[in-house]
Amino acid sequence: ILALIAFICIETIMACSPCEGLYFFEFVSCSAFVVTGVLLIMFSLNLHMRIPQINWNLTDLVNTGLSTFLFFIASIVLATLNHRAGAEIAAVIFGFLATAAYAVNTFLAVQKWRVSVRQQSTNDYIRARTESRDVDSRPEIQRLDT
Image 1 (cartoon, one colour):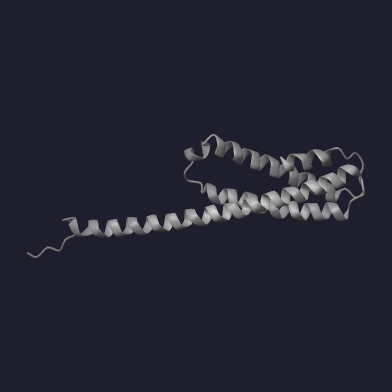
Image 2 (cartoon, helix red, strand yellow):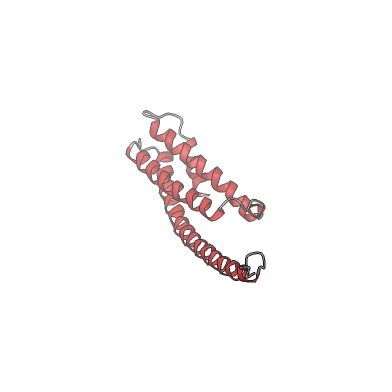
């Protein structure tokens, strides 16, 4: 929501000079809103369960991490090139709020990713132990003493 509000604020600006900072902020806020919205819909409708080949915890972590970094940079650039227009000030404020929200989400995504990595390594260990026990009971692998 904060990314959408920041995008709406930046879109209300009619004149700018220089415009590069504004365009970068516009790109970041729109991209973050769209990508996060798509991931939110996929997670909400459990569509991510249909594509198990993708590590969704890592995907969420990369999205939130990049969004945090890019929002932070875009907000700083827009703040330094600010023309003191009300919409620019509001966009900068919402940009920093979005940065904070994405930073919290990045922290939570890192924790979730670490838990999933630990569970995966534990599952791999259990699977390896089970397979090593099965080797002894398989006749085609046993030594022939004839």
